[in-house]
Image (cartoon, rainbow, N blue to C red; front, side):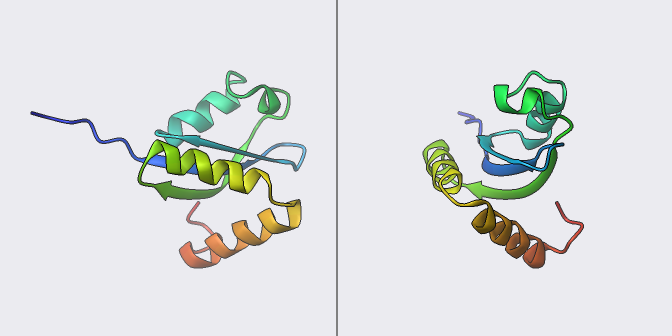
Length: 95
């Protein structure tokens, strides 16, 4: 019996106006394409193009959604620190 394994991600994109949008998905490439096609979240539709600036993996959908909620509560400064920390871990051109 074969089970489909979904990897869940929490992500932050930087919008064209410099604001951040946080979401979760199982297919990050497809999700970014959807945002940039103006078919994603209502918030990002008028703020394209978006650029992926932060990505973290979660074991379950629930964990990814919980992390999304946590990040959305952060201040802009705290989000910038999170983004910088992740870039430092993976290298500046990794995301």
